[in-house]
Image 1 (tube, helix red, strand yellow):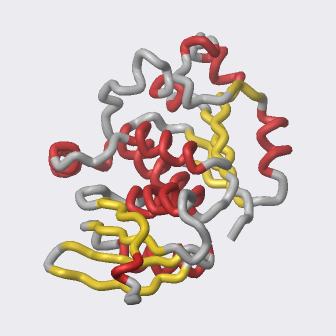
Image 2 (cartoon, each protein chain N blue to C red):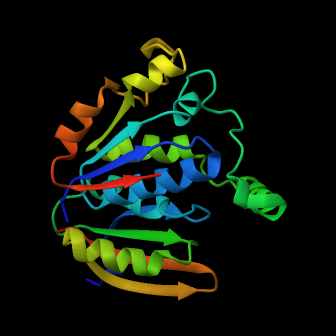
Length: 137
Length: 79
């Protein structure tokens, strides 16, 4: 179970970020190397001054979904960035910001939380992904 | 000596959602020597299947899997 996994994160809402963090942490616990590429709107959530902010939910969540998420938060469910931090502690998890998206959102590397290891272009992403699985969220 | 009396480390993952019980166990088991035993307490109802799968994938033996009320208890022996 050590096939590498590449995940492109695109949406920056808290529910998608949480689902992604769960997938990353689960793969890391199985010893799979995980390469995460941050594209477009998700980057805003990785800004060091915004990482703990409320990033909303996907439209399909609706009011019931919002209540369900709030209930889990009250029960002490770890936020997505804490799950990612634990996944990185396991090792084998690398998080890279897409350079085009950095330009688009006018973000520099110093704006990003230390969870992000660096900035790369799509060619570097595909080279790392190699023949392994790629997931787009 | 029974397995229970030889527990080296306990991971209390009660109240943690998937996949943190597995992540905490994966981190804790690193500090053990081969053959040493770890006990995990969890309340995540998905953890039973997760611990079976994780044991299979990593080779750490799942010695016991029991449930008492809403608390799941796992005993694993490090590969």
